[in-house]
Image (cartoon, rainbow, N blue to C red; front, side, top):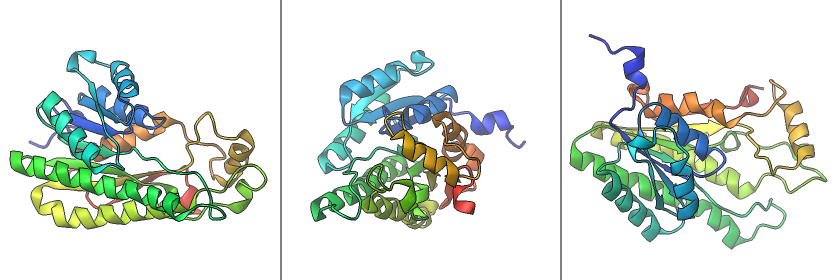
Length: 262
């Protein structure tokens, strides 16, 4: 008998590791997985912030927890994953969401700052490979979701930032374009291992600290004439993480209010 819709989206009994899980979008991602039945482990560079985010998740009886994890530090990547397995006994879903880097645009970013952005892609790969080894050893399927961006697909509008703030970082664009294509590569090589690798690319989701003039200008560029709210990623990430997308791999799901359809 074919599974029901409820069964396809149900994450009961599964453990999800979400890097950057204490961040603006990471909190919504963690909440979606917890609401669908998963035990969630919040990865964060700041372990105390991670613990607070884990404690705020629904269904605390599932023992949500946190691990210290920095994508730019290989030891922290491997150690954070090992800690997640130690705490929960297993990891079935990996959401590569966390990142860090200078917000400078093409006019003044240095080589070291540019390289610092690209280190996030290295961390995504190292963590994904560690997850792959763990899942293959257990002989079970696994799902990886990489966080890309619409800015891994299209350039930003110069006039949206002019005289307000630096333009969207060229290094960020390079990073996200690389993450989207790395998704395709790993999906092909790991399909035989029952590991699906997909990418979720948000569009404009500015946080509360974003310059309001820039946000207003961005709204004029969007077909929906508004910015996204974090909860609007929840359905997409649940789809990619769950059995609802069991025949989907190597894809980039764009949640951008139509931005990239212009």
